[in-house]
Image 1: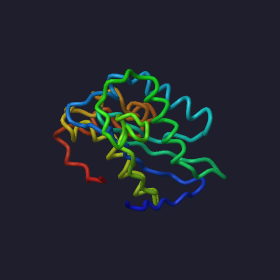
Image 2 (image 1 turned 135 degrees about the vertical axis):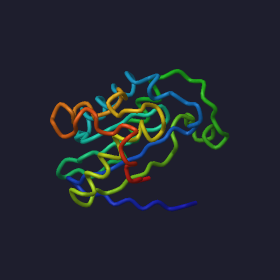
Image 3 (image 1 turned 90 degrees about the horizontal axis):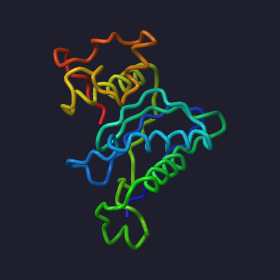
Amino acid sequence: MTEYRRFYIPNAMWFFTVNLAERKNNHLLIDNIDELRKAFRYVKQRKPFRIEAIVIMPDHLHCIWTLPPNDADFSVRWNMLKGRFSRAIDRGERISKSRQKRRERGIWQRRFWAHLIQDQDDCNRHVDYIHWNPVKHGHVEHVIDWPYSSFHRYVKQGVYEKNWGNNANNEIDGIE
């Protein structure tokens, strides 16, 4: 079995990609967006962190978190969040024999992608990538049209203009 090594750094900023186990034609996250929001609130109340940017796609999500001083454990936060969301929605997903043995649901991929944000340039590229993702995947033509994104907050703050990220723009550099 592959051994995953994670670096845990207090007060760090991290980019994450978290996928559903079954991605094809799966809209579970946006179909249950209220339960996902509740799961985020639940975890943030118990293990605080700041969401710098986020996009919820039908079958995966990307986000950037800043962890508090003296607390570097993002893995426990993801475990809590995935568990809380999973318990809140109806059963019915396909569950592999391996997951059945471990009494797991078949909603989430077991692992997630984590990248330590190195500097402001790195942060800017990842925030752009997060907000561009719905256009990249063909869900909308304009970033502003995707409702499950922190892009709207960034527009209100004056970081982006409303028309940033339409199909006429150049492709945003890939991060994945």
